[in-house]
Length: 104
Image (spheres, rainbow, N blue to C red):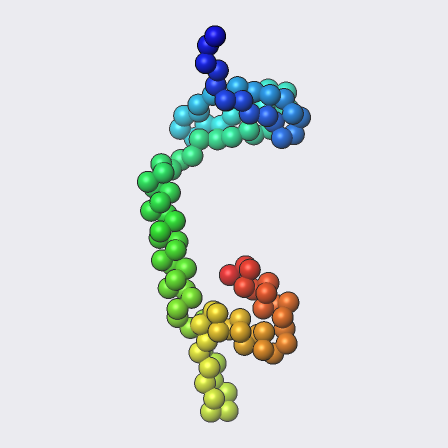
């Protein structure tokens, strides 16, 4: 008995396909409905690691520095993103604070 490749099922029409390797920027499509089944990543796992690390560092920097600098009637506020969310929460805009926190 020969060793078969892993199987993949089309999410659109439930056709079962044998998973074959794709090269470069190639992709695999369903033979019945032309839905994209999977594609070859342009990045190697090492490149993905570097990208994730760079984004994480950028995320930390963005959250450690003030988002906005407001000055009114002698009062100055320079909140970071988490502190801005807390200020919005304390003003009673809970939905806005949660949504901004989930997006940011």
